Length: 477
Image 1 (cartoon, rainbow, N blue to C red):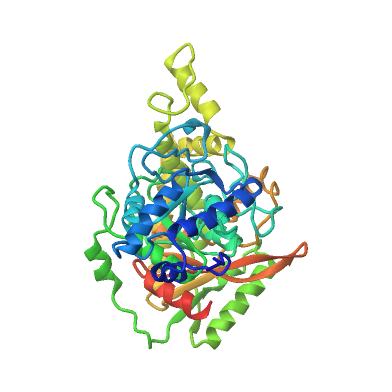
Image 2: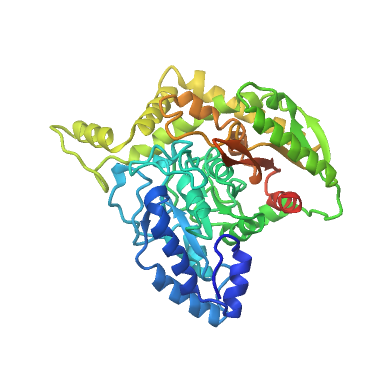
């Protein structure tokens, strides 16, 4: 039967594969053909794996013997900072150009057990530092919906791969919105799971207390299927949450319960939010109310500090994590007259401008005389923000905001204004700071230059309550 990639979902593909309507090889070939047509312009993939068809053949055997999982034969795109053994992994940086992964990330192992087919590695902002995928050492990625606009970042390649029908599922990483923002810009569903529910083993670290691997999907159900496949305790990750703790905290979600959605009005009144975004958000909330959800205004008095806190803690952790890239053990290596010159030349030429900027910021806030003034103060505020959310979740089940303050912006529009780029994270960073799960769902579109540019609605829930997010997402959107 002909394969309609536009309407295909993981569940539909699974059913067709099980019935033999088409094979895993035929499905992968359909996506590979689409990649060949579109990727030269979009630049979603840095590399398409030459063994994709071989993987599909193995997946087909799992399907025929009924020994694979729900994802058997499903073509998946992987962000370039997630390790796949024997494959290149560069985090879109020249400093790691040519590096080959020596082991599988835990999420990759899980997907291999399921029988997923890895089509290739996707472009990203270098070391996940950016919100537009314009900071890659290997060229910008364009938004498939409007190629004059960014796809979001830092996981823009994964979002673009899915949006251009170059994969049926994708994984990215989210440190301050890097899954949710590109999902919103590309009209997709994106999940930032509870911190510690998905192993970070095999993910190149940017900011260790904030990073989290998560899924992109065309539907909420697709995101849920991917999440269930990759979640779970991992002894290789010291921050991984034991399964029994997650289950104990989770509790039950009664289908008949009228859920309450909290609206942080004080944050929505902030300047810088696009009028069309705010209008779209209010329409989305009105729809939720008509669907039977209770709507309640809430106050998060310290949330307006979240962006400032994030841009102290994230660069500090990034500067420490990226110190390992010195040209001695792997990747780019430049020789100087002294060992110090070796490091300076390697890191100066190997790291891009945005990465160098954040390393400098991080080193500054951690330096003697400034540690207490910036880093410690940021952590104190982080704890206050966490307490605000914990108090609010005693009154509401979910907190809703727009995913982004603006629609996808033009390529190059914010390249020379880092502060404007950072402000795009205003709604997404709180979930990373306090470790709660957050889901973005498509909520309509706005007219820009004669094209419909997608918008997203974000839901945040208490720790380990991804089930609530999936329920709200599936019931109304």
